[in-house]
Length: 70
Image (tube, rainbow, N blue to C red):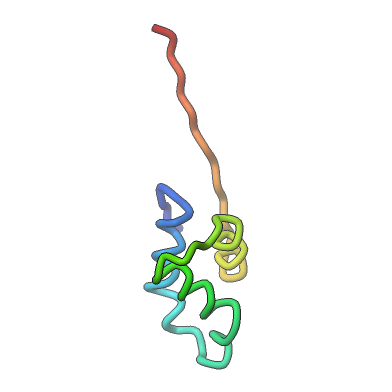
């Protein structure tokens, strides 16, 4: 299991490790558009990143917020 500190970090890992292995005909459309949007900083939502990641594996996300009174 891979662990990441953010959705963006997980998506970047996916782009470098999983995306290149996807057959060219499968890359057509949404995966290529997501790659372009992320790579060229055109904007991609965390929701879209999570949807794509979940098509290739199980995504578990948890947020931890700690607050201590002064």
